[in-house]
Image (tube, rainbow, N blue to C red):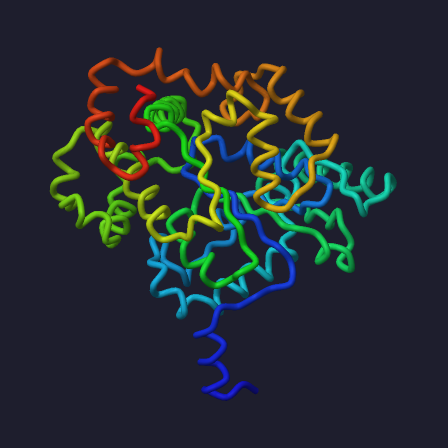
Length: 342
């Protein structure tokens, strides 16, 4: 049994784990799924797709300040260690799936059958969840890097990084007009589970207002309520991205403009892999070729013309809407990335 002093010492120190963890964090509708599958295509990476959307991190606020990281380290470490044990198909085997360097053809074939059966049962019987076996055996999984893709925890990025020195992160940012246009399109098409419009999610705005960043801009719930939906979404983009950028160390975070990846998929992926210590490989190169040469109109598809997809907002938003977005993001830290891209 740990003594109180031992427990306190464990919580107050930065925890160093043996394996490397790569965080792929961004806002929804920012290209995170495609980027997640790019990392999943690496033969030396175990991938977890939005585990925090299924297994909630209830002990860590969605907007956390990095200077308070010590009180969250134990919970964060426990959560990370539990990523290996998750068996939900949407988390451990979102299609497409890829072979890994330690996996033989027989096990990989059985894994694919397991995944397809799990998906079929879920569609036929919504309450039936067939567990998916681990593609990589427990004895070898610890020897591989893990990539965790999230649209829930960008506001936690700073505290997670401070609690684990082995972590590197890709902070994914999409042009605010692209993000807003895609959110509005998804809501009008009924693509989201939540019935509350993103621009009217005042519970989340209330959390955002706890960040020192909101005080910098003099925001309040009352002011937000009196804004148009486009304006609220613009501030949502500013606040969560600036909070993440202000709470992290630049040498451990690769700030990725989604549009840069769309224009030069191979070159930018090589830079991300170099940053995270991953070697270039044929499987990733093949996936990039396939995912950018095929076209699917499915809302969540990773197969589409990336440049066309990233610039769709130019024909979807009205000029007054674009001007309203530009006015809000101008002069902000994340907005500086896009000052010349309107």
